[in-house]
Amino acid sequence: MGEQPIYTTRAHVFQIDPSTKKNWVPASKQAVTVSYFYDSTRNSYRIISVDGSKVIINSTITPNMTFTKTSQKFGQWADSRANTVFGLGFASEQQLTKFAEKFQEIKDAAKLAKDKSQEKGDTLSNHSQESGRETPSANQASSINGTDDEKISFSPETAQLKSENERLKSCVEQSNTTAKKYETELQTLKESNARLVDALQESSANVESWKKELTVCQEESETLRKKIGELEAQCKEANQEKQRNAQLTVRVKELEAELQEKEQELENLRRQAEIIPQLMGECESITTKLKVAESKNKELEGRIEGLQMDINDSRQKQGNMKGELKKFMDVLDGKLDELHEFRQGLAKLGVDN
Image (cartoon, rainbow, N blue to C red; front, side, top):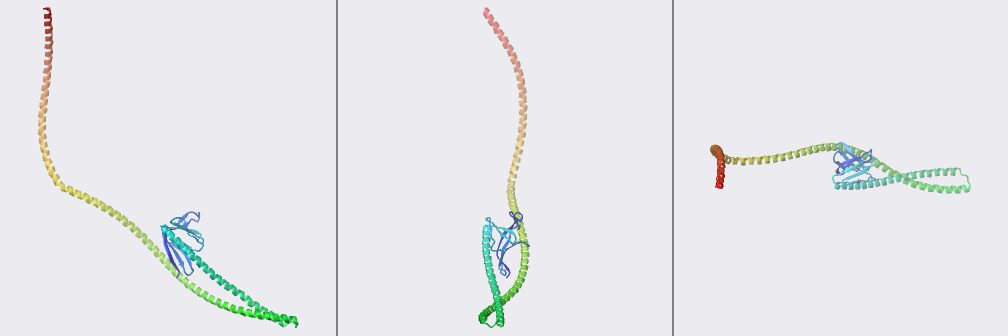
């Protein structure tokens, strides 16, 4: 089966700065695909993210890892094997929550798989330890038998030694019985060991086939990465085309607005063109009236000139009359003076009389 994606999302990828261990360094220029993968052959889980042809995240999830939410849209986890800290920036809080829940779920699954593998390892270790303990017991039994035979062959004919010989024989018989029992168990263990060897060989054969499948999957993955790169390039071209279309749409709207303005101006000009004949008639009547007014104006100017000449004549006559009146006034003043002197003379004569 190989590795299969079980969950996929998109996020901006960051890594902790190895020099400062504080600042975040962007690992991708834009949001990229981040996926959880499950390897059924190894019973392991990984987080993988690829930006074009570059693998920016390859983190195997272990039970000791912890995914921490540091803000509403950002989370991080530490990978001791890669000796770094990964950070993900999501477009929404829901995506971050879903990724964190999936991380906890996979972490629990990895812990369960680790516990099962430890139980299997402990079982195999116990079997090997029992087989190791049983084999020395059989050897010990055979060693005791050889010692007793030597004692029987070379023991002196005394009652004490005979009793010891009997006791030793009983011990040997018991040890032989125990040895047979151990031999039976040893045979059982050997058969179990043979079955385990067969299973191991079968597993090795499966590993070889799995390696071949892994190679095929890697080749398919490389092909998919290339296709993803091509699709991303096509997406970039499509985005550029969308931007161009948007600009063209805006330009078309502007041109439509200008066209409407021009049409409105043309309509106004048409309306004005309809009014032009009427205006021309009015203009002709006004021209006629203007000619009549000009002729009247000329007559008035002639009259004004005549009146101006009359005024000038009257002014001249008035000036002459003023001169004559002044002379008359001077004569009158002289006459009045004479009359006054005459009155004074008459008054003086009346006083004398």
